Image (tube, rainbow, N blue to C red; front, side, top):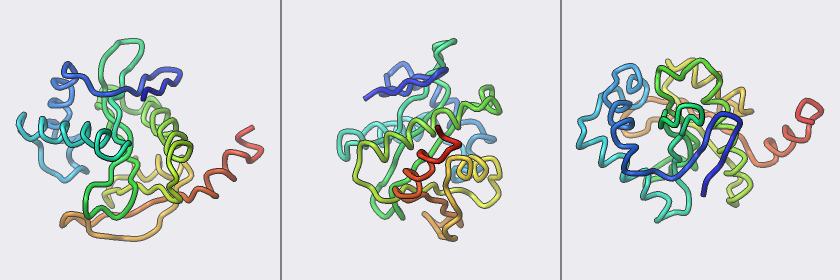
Length: 177
């Protein structure tokens, strides 16, 4: 399953994406809101395998985000719901060199459309660290709303979300035409 936007290709992971993914996972700024700890190469490999395995086991997962102009893998976007997760989560991570260009919104918008178009989920959530203002703003730009505080794997988080009916109404509003 591949999605394409104006500037991005959301595609399945390839072995050649590992170096870019390991660099993301080793970056303290990237990991600051994703559990807080950088990952070793071995842990990054296991995490990438978990992300890719979601597709085989559950029929959804995170796509590799490829920047079409450069051909580089610049991050990930998509859905996770491992055991014990509070819901069907849309998440995103973009490499620092590509941030503040609207690419996370572009990728997450395409993923959100796919999520409601290809699954029977009635709600999609995003799990966000309370201090991550950029992700909160992105969630709200996607139409998500603050739902509640929670604790996920020992970390205090905020849950944002959007229901299918809200999403469909937003897509059919005059602003979306």
